[in-house]
Length: 485
Ligand code: PHE
Image 1 (cartoon, rainbow, N blue to C red):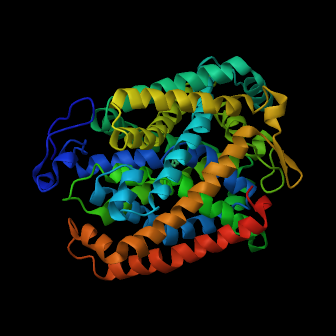
Image 2 (cartoon, rainbow, N blue to C red):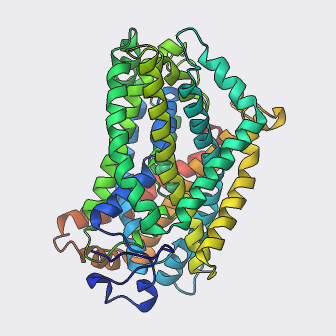
Image 3 (cartoon, rainbow, N blue to C red):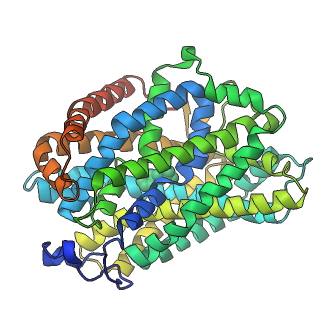
């Protein structure tokens, strides 16, 4: 187990680390395997599971989407996650440095650079949505939602209020910078250990309330009874994109987190635990949100839910908690606090990718790098903050399939779906073909000597299935960009 580390993220080398170079021992390292799993699960579990997954499921056919999503997680997400963690631990570098280390004198480092840019872009709008959860902590605590309030009107007024949008975005980004400045272990690992289990319990309780609400049956049927006529190319694009976003893949977050892992750790079980935890929470979130859609006046599969969907749906659940109004106030407030904290552990991993790049490659001091990246993401996020109603031209930037798309949604389509998918394709190609699957397997065998049968399955999935499936989808997307919805 690693010794205590200094606040800047460095610590003493542990037994397994001693064989590593001096440069490596200057980097932070997770305190234990559980520490890594919790931190990586902290990165994976966030708004992607609770805000994005139910919205995507509602817009893409419910149960049909769920099936596609699960297939994408198992057949594509998990292999890519193992590839990223392996690459990170082997090179002990940020994404750009990792590609430079395995493919020197080539242009493959651009894959890492794409990840760094994607990380910054996702962070910019992620912080806006996370700011909404902070705004909702205040609203639920102040008993804004009663059985006769209109959640749609409340969300509309909130998203149109420019100063609140900027203020909450600023507060969230400042929190994020504060955690990352604390360094890898002190900042990230400790929080995740408490947060993730609490979130799970809270979700469980809310699911019980949601599935027992009057009228829940229709939402449950939509979520669990697949209607294969809904299964089209758009659903596959959405399922794959959601798998990458939710598992924090395709931009080097898992390369960066893997770079703080010790040689003793079993990468296969670590990746599997992270994937299981992430998918489990997403499925639970579906059970919480989809049955409640009807109460909010949304017909799943007919009405499209926008970026604010869960913020209009969940208050109806809270206003029907037992011990009115206290049950709703306590549960609602606690839920939004936990969601904000889960978003924080994810946003921290986005910020960490860009920070690690500046620290490792550009030799910036950690604190300066963190503040600069946080400041930049704050500015880049302003149009997203104003693009959900506050400023008309930013709220309707393009027209896609007859539907006007706001700046925040556009950012999510381009960076949360397109470049993540492209990044995952390139990562699977580099690890599977350029660096070489044999070297990757050797790295995995530190900490997991019996990686024979599973190793062949992984190698097949990573070298053949992942690139072919992802590339096919990207080619179709070039032909029909409107399929990203
Ligand atoms: N996986 C995170 C979530 O579900 C978001 C994220 C995406 C984090 C990509 C890092 C990288 O909220």
